[in-house]
Image (cartoon, rainbow, N blue to C red):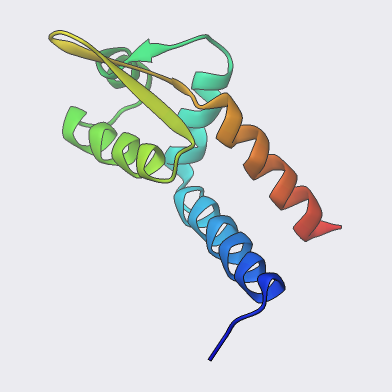
Length: 101
């Protein structure tokens, strides 16, 4: 069975929006994104100083945001520097705006 280009785009767009929504479905992840949005980048340890959570918990939230493509990490041994993935952030904002319109 052949799928039309429209149904493929529908599926891809819907899945992408759901992936972004799932990543944003936790208050700590929203707070992390807000924090990262106020500065160019930061290290995991910096976030542990800001939020009253264990480093392992912060790392798990960062992993979810990174898997969704909303942030990116760069290894600066022995730490990882995180920042907003501006391209995907822009895509996510556009998708949410279209969804809510």
